[in-house]
Length: 177
Image 1 (cartoon, one colour):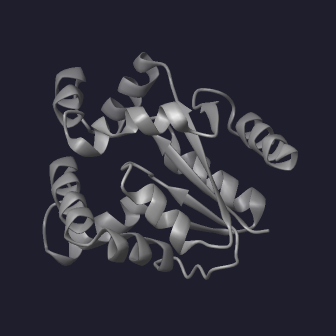
Image 2 (cartoon, helix red, strand yellow):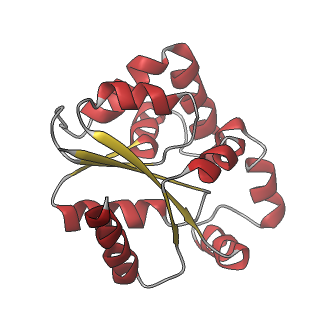
Image 3 (tube, one colour):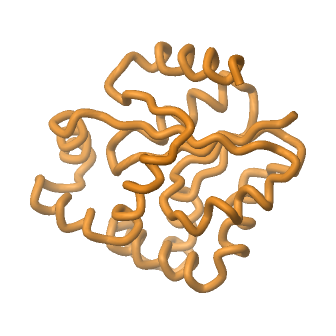
């Protein structure tokens, strides 16, 4: 049976790195909510700021959640019946929609976390600002909804570990399912 692995985690936790490594290891496609929203922001001629990403992402989600999720999945060329890694699961509303869209595949949610000092340093290094700016960004609903997703994830991983170690651990977990 095909499997879809959705990666959830806070900004700077390592979702994108993990999703790329995992898709490469599993030899499957990778869809990214963040990449899709960045494309939508670019199409509108807006700067690629965190605020614009959050606003446009929320507009897409609230405008038509089914179309948004479907567009993200198809943006990488994925077809039902194939394995897939999804980067950037952020909203509870998308979980049942994605589960329906990917049938007959099973979806497993992997939550990635990282110690706060490492996460803040990563964000600073990529120009997201200081702790105060990050705190402001994290008041947005796209960040607030991560808490319940993290609590109900199928598997948890640490984003400050060696990349290969996480992939090995996830692969072992998948084999045990």
